Image (cartoon, rainbow, N blue to C red; front, top):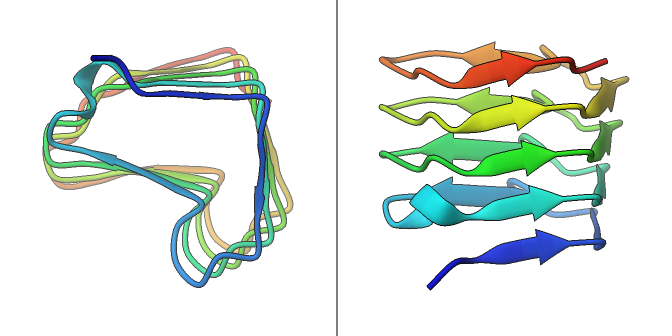
Length: 102
């Protein structure tokens, strides 16, 4: 089964806007507006390997996207701006493919 987050507005969360981990290897996060969350807009961790494509990720109080703990996947063609910390942060044995983000 493939989790899909398509064309949503995700905002005002007390933690991450979207968290992908463990079985999120086939998750697809596309064309969402993710903003004003206390934690990262998108957090990818523990072997999660989603495709994150054509999202607007902005005005978060942490990173726009953070990849940690053996997370990976593809992060491409997103607009990531006005987040308090890094637009994209890659840490702790993470290995995403990052392409053509603004």
